[in-house]
Length: 196
Image 1 (cartoon, rainbow, N blue to C red):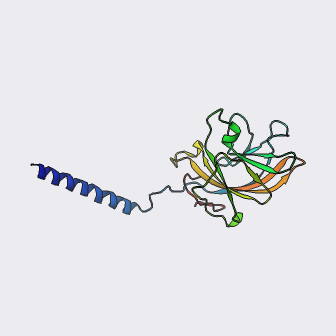
Image 2 (cartoon, rainbow, N blue to C red):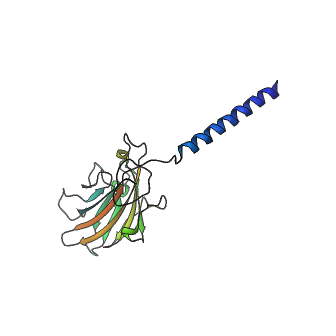
Image 3 (cartoon, rainbow, N blue to C red):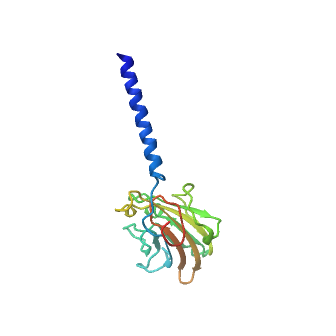
């Protein structure tokens, strides 16, 4: 009797395996599919310190906005300009929160690629707890675990962006930067516009 049960279990497992392989082959690429278009923008932000309260000092990539750095924590990265050196500092969200409140995971990675040639994000190597010194022309990749990216068209939250510091103005404590965002979760394409 045991041999018949064993044979039936083996046949059922084999049938399930063949069915799964057939479904995977029929579906093709089973990764996330893009439904939203990439976008590129240029915005001006202010340094977190040494400016009046209220102007935007951070970027929220999914929303395509320069936003205030405040207790709403709607930003991905924040900017500050060191008063003595004039160097720009780039902060991921968690370093501003300082562990006081739970925030989304935002990682930053310096890139040596030319901004226009950088058409694909990397999926590893991001620093989530480091401050980056930046100069005009520097390029960064950003990985943001943004819950607002989960919507009717996607079920994940990790999105990717690239950021270039265009100019730093220490006297006015402002920063001009451009960025390209792929609002589709888990897709690494950073083409400037269109659906990847």
